[in-house]
Length: 127
Ligand code: FES
Image 1 (cartoon, rainbow, N blue to C red):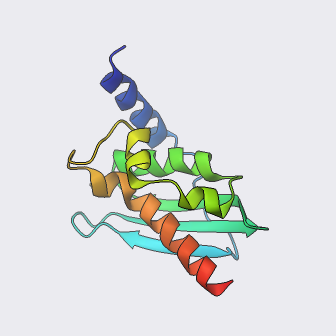
Image 2 (cartoon, rainbow, N blue to C red; image 1 turned 120 degrees about the horizontal axis):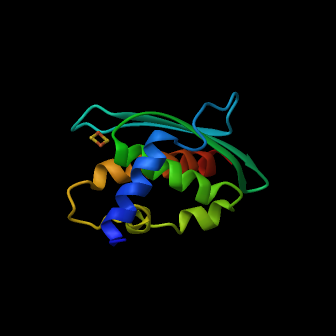
């Protein structure tokens, strides 16, 4: 199967059945982001224990790429230390779904990642 077909399938599967959707009551960190060019929005909630992200949930009103991207990312980071998550690059997040810089979908594919990093930065500042 051609690589772009594999990624299209991956995006579609995660869009139809996004993983870790929801809300965390009393989260340790949270952040909201809006893609100003389309109005799509995401809210990310984190539970953090001893420097480890023990849970991540999100609510999203977005396109297939934005939903698939945070769905895949959420599975990758639950159980990881904050320091490890901070090493993840925007390019790495885009690669998860077969995109590169200059594809024109940077904002869609990284809106969830940006919300996550903002939530973590706020958390680090407060602790
Ligand atoms: Fe709005 Fe993709 S079109 S986030």
